[in-house]
Image (cartoon, rainbow, N blue to C red; front, side, top):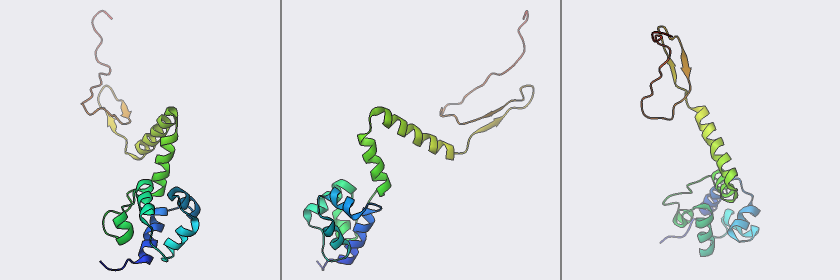
Length: 146
């Protein structure tokens, strides 16, 4: 096996760190900020414990960190932060977060529009989550005696 490219390891660790400060990143890994700086400067490679914590805290495959081969980090720092906040939130907060995300996703989706012609002359707009056909009975003839 060849020598490790410490500069490339540093680049990959910067990618994993994302927008976290070196201090915050170091705290999550249980190491000194100076150590993160040395990793990122290409002065040294992370040890086994740091690689384990990179995997458990950030989902970074140790083989990818060291060699660049294999799956890279699966989530951005924003996604990791969202998950961390979600895990510590009370149930009402989790429900509100899911609702807000569903609303945001739904707002970006084109809305269904159905135009009815003839005697009805109605326009119905909005999305339907039901996958089964939906029938609307609108108007019609009055029954005898009404």
